[in-house]
Image (cartoon, rainbow, N blue to C red; front, side, top):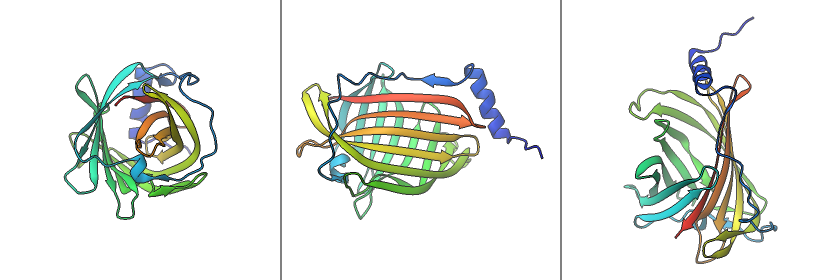
Length: 247
């Protein structure tokens, strides 16, 4: 029995064919030898308030995308609800993404909503997607199943796509990371995000480096590769390697 692909999938494939011949790829692989020291087994746990400190006022940091030669300004600001905040990435004064985070009563940090201004979509997670449990122990993998609904940015009553989501977080190692102020000890966490949408399957693998110093804390760098497949074929690969330059 022949299966007819849904109209939305055909539209996705047609768009992919229009934008590129074969698989699309943005961002390049980066030689990290000048940035990363040797890995060692993690000797301590990583707490969510250390990895993702909630801002008490607007906090601005400057980032570079080593995979795409881009400069990004990141603004973390308190949101209206207590225990929640917004993180907005901008380039040349224009917003790229805006993420809404919340800290649960038990201490988990979770992503409620993500807005992509480039693709003009808003993604909602239910339940909120945990990006860091209250405490992540060395070698431990935290796993969560959630769901995602994607809406056009200007029509948040019309579901464009939806599907199940799985997120896995593992504290894999400690590693020195070269920063403008000198080498900084960091925790390295591997995050694997997968979702099965009606139009495509998405797998995003991210390495996250968090400052391990007692008076430091926060995210130092994130390196990701997102692969989008339809009908078993890769239609897009996106790579980013964001490094916090200042402060």
